[in-house]
Image 1: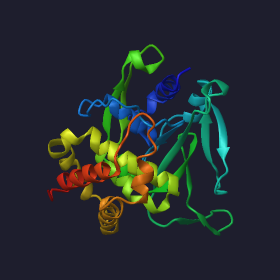
Image 2: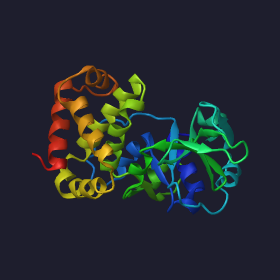
Image 3: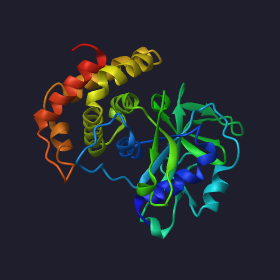
Length: 279
């Protein structure tokens, strides 16, 4: 089973909740190839074995997602990293999937601590049960849920013999801005990967920035806090004002193309100037 077939099986299984969930992370980036406004590249997207499924913090998900996933052949496994209670869950597709798994995410807003109803002690507000699954709560995830775009995996690519329609993914502006906002929370190698993600998103949608992405930025910016706006501005400056070690690391990640560090910085500078209306 190809990795697209695995993802397609996940998406089909989650069809009853499709209007409530957004596929974020590396799979959103891979699905940009099906967005009509994206430039069709001659290079492959970065491979990712996990699918991140996000839903709004305050939206109740009706039905039992866990039951649906297990019925489709997924196996539930707890993710004990962080020692959170309850632990977030991941859903693997068995040995044939070669490591493919899905995890659920929801925004962390407000205080990072909550009071345990039983012990009355403060504990990290790190997970949330909803729709039969336990999701990890992450800061700035709400940015990815703003004005999602729809894509369809055509039948010839899905790996399951049918089109997988109306998948919600983050718009490219939200995708880029969330990467900037979480930069301090990422380990070194992930930060370099995120720099490449930002570059690729700008590259893929470079022809749509003025007409399509700039209006999205204006609507997203209105929802951000002052601290988030300042962090985004600082992030653009820190990552793309000049060629730096993260940029040098980022250009070495792809194995099917060669990117000059100076070209990466210049394209991102021009893209942000056009997006923010400062060019």
